[in-house]
Amino acid sequence: MGDWRTHLDREIDRMVKSPQYSGITISAYRQSDGSHYNFDAGQLYARTPFFATSMVKLYVVAILMQLRDEGKVAFDTPFKSYLPNSNLWVEIHVKDAMDYTGIITIRHLMSQTSGLGDFFVYRNRARALQHALADGVDTSWTFEDVILRTRSHGAIEAPGASSKALYTDSNFHILGKVIEALEQKSFSQVVEDRITRPLGLTATYIYNDPSDTRPANFMSKTREVVVPRAMASFQADAGLVTTSREGLIFLRSFFEGYLFERRRIRDLFDWKPLHRPIDYGLGVMRVDASRLVALKFRLKEPWSWGRKLPTVYGHFGFGGSFAFYAPELQIYAAGTTNQLADPARSVALALRVIEAISRGEVEPFEAHEAVEEDLVHHGAE
Image 1 (tube, rainbow, N blue to C red):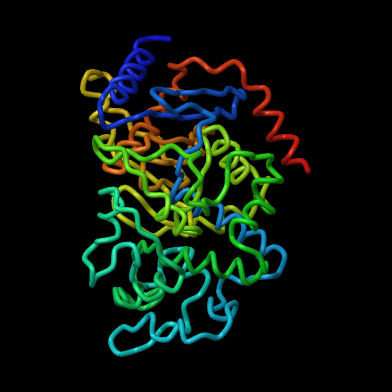
Image 2: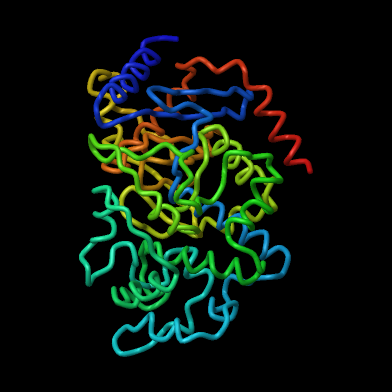
């Protein structure tokens, strides 16, 4: 196995021994030879449910791609066309005395180019909601609250006018309501009908019930936080619960064509810079990291300092969740570090795991046949 396996294991063990991490779980797959890999430590395992937060945006995209193939939605149509007329939308996007609300399209929302303000980080309360969550203050909100806070934040840019992606959780909260209107079902039911049941995922769902204690609680620095009312409020922007094992099955299904036509996947790769080293497409991130990103893991490995990290597609979220596919290496990885304070560390760790697998420096997990059979069987249906 070489020294890399030892260093990688030691780094994961060291992280979990720190009071900042209750556990780490990563499931990975190498497409070239069908090998599966597990990296579990602490209180988290491949079948432990966790809050996957913004990984849900890939589920939203998969559903919208299905609806587009069925002729139920067009990405260049204004989102208001799919929702009942309501005073709720009045002037939610006003820039330079112009109301642009009526021209915001499904594509603008998916690609983070709507220019809307962010309900989660909104101006008039100075990031209070985001900070309250990290501090363990459990609050709830409604869709009406999301729109009111989005309006309160104020528009950032005219729809489609910026050369950059302007990340706003309000975009996907609205997309969730579009999906509900088209399907005449709750977003959680649509996810079940279109994704989890066809793929045979039994531990993946949209979190709706604050009394549900199945998902592992977040760590925020050295403190465990319990925020079920907040997590039940997110829905289509950050309301996903999954496991690393089932996150991997979904990720493969997304990129291998089990959920929508594989040839259409490139429609999502209309990249705009978000912030280095991340570009954003239609609900999909591309991380093309410099050598510096993983340097914190390589201080004791000078022979690795000159290596470029693999480019990955997918999404990560607050709380350390991630689902990444490295197309050049044909390697998938999904999991979480479950830490609110340092999501970038989970990205660096995921990239390092992918790199180690590509170089043959970790051993595959032998008992993977059931995972492969599940994916092939349910995908074929």
